[in-house]
Image 1 (tube, each protein chain N blue to C red):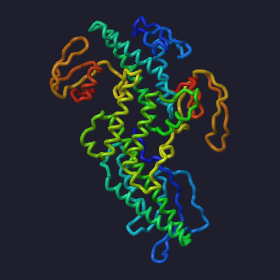
Image 2 (tube, chains in turn purple, brown; image 1 turned 135 degrees about the horizontal axis):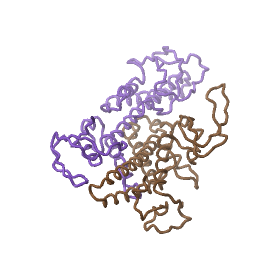
Image 3 (cartoon, each protein chain N blue to C red; image 1 turned 45 degrees about the vertical axis):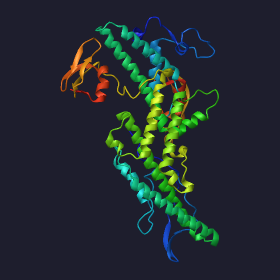
Image 4 (tube, chains in turn orange, yellow; image 1 turned 180 degrees about the vertical axis):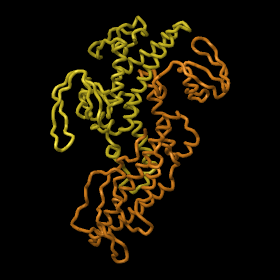
Length: 257
Length: 238
């Protein structure tokens, strides 16, 4: 079970909900409905409690739209699959953040230089959008890491090519570091004797299991000295502990009746 | 019965024996001297396993139990090698070894999953514990947790944070990563009678009240109310 996307990731404050739009000189600016109201300092909301009431005309659409799209992409794949890394989407969000920040910088300077306190509202809104974007981006990246982490436990330390293809270079690096840490942890267990805890994932239920051979594997000796010939498509009733490794490698298949 | 599988020369096992090479009497003041039969050891392992599985937060590490259990397993494996091939006993012993190894692996996995899930909080708890307090993480787990933190932080910085505006390049992991929910409900069985356990009200029109937990009784309660009893061993999570 992977962690759901509604991570409380990143600090955020509820923005002022009561903006109205008006023309000021030749630009659209945001004015608080009641100027004496201070920003609502509500509790940290879950990602999807946010009342997307950013009904803001920005020319091309709402702020933080692209960031939400990234989250939705992951939310759609609720079974833990890893979609391709959305390089474009990430870049667009970062660009939006840069633009918002630059606009804020100039507004802040103008507000200070010319005492334009009417700019404060828009500065605050852009700042909220910046925080929102940061939070969405980090949630997107972190949730992907959780999915990638799960892959180590499911597939082992070598990932199938189609999965690796969906990871960006930095994620591959993270994965490589993660499996190193895990390996060194497992090696150090029991005073250095080591224990592979990625094995024994299920409680041992039966001593013997029915297996089918998926490919030719030659001779195979079991504990009591008997030698079995593992020929493709042959079926055998073998001790479970002997087969685990071969099942993982895809040589044998557990036949459940 | 695990007793059957243990080589006769081991007999009763002490914790300190497991940690020293030759099994001779170790300085009693240095290690916790606890005499246990193998069956007791497995019992302790199973208790630690169940508690860790059902507790919402990471519990104290039981590395002595882990080490003893691993030693037990290797003795049993050795013995198994010496059993005559084709002997019926071998498969039953093999099953027992697999069972114990499963419980041990599952226990360590449960801990690792919680360490990863709550990594900044776990490291913070370990950092801020008092001198005499038992440690939350084993040395290996501590190393793993630190590496996990560093790896994740490095990744986030490289891929996105360093490309963000200057005032947004840091993420406070303690705030960003959720904490374990200590108010989740847990099933428990009482091992040692407890009196006057405070229960918080569920709704506004209730008031807090106290309950006595009778030995052997089973309850469904919020973890927060019984957390200290879990670590003292007075209750067992089920």
